[in-house]
Length: 297
Image: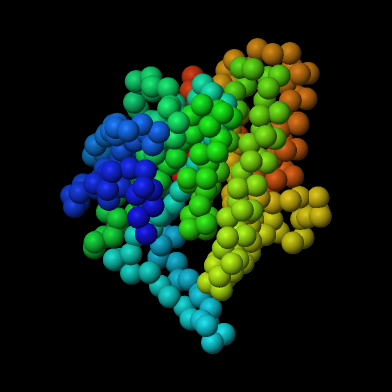
């Protein structure tokens, strides 16, 4: 399926037939003209280490046999071949100027020093590489700019056909502590609402019902049945990652205030089945930890 073909040029969405790795192409869907920013992948391990890690993960996942239920009630096992592509989707949301673009650049191009331009509406970026044969593994990254004002655009990436491979990334701005908690709650609720709408659409057909059941089974599998807080956690059907960004500015706050806010964020993440990470573009250890997390998202 041609994901995002209504929003980007077909040549950008599909790419050329070159075998070399192509890291990212970005376009703004609210504009009548398409803006492209392409960064060719370099062969040095310093520049490609992070991207190579996610591709390795995608290849491993794509080689895992999958079990499907046939219309007659029987099950069959299918192992992907090297002619099949693996696709994964990430949606970055958060308040304006919270650092979403910087985090995406840190993931795709960790050594890039250029300051990213402000995101206009919804921007789409992808990383791609050949995984053998004619297959190409693709990581699709959507970034919502403008904060809450343009939140309706989340319906573009949060689509029934993408739920099985979609991860929501909520970026928070720790430089404004007073707004962090309310922002986190608002985006978690918005993503949940949109995901529920997609699940309802899926249940309208028999194949879609099976897909919806698979999505819910995967979400429940993220929390062991023996977990002591099972009855208190309402896991979001898609994986959620909450990133408390600009930690370098937050580190100067009163220690007591830091503990209270971080405890509140841990509670929000815990009750939603989300992962919580702190990050700062100016802290090498936190940046490395963020990239490691993204490789397993």
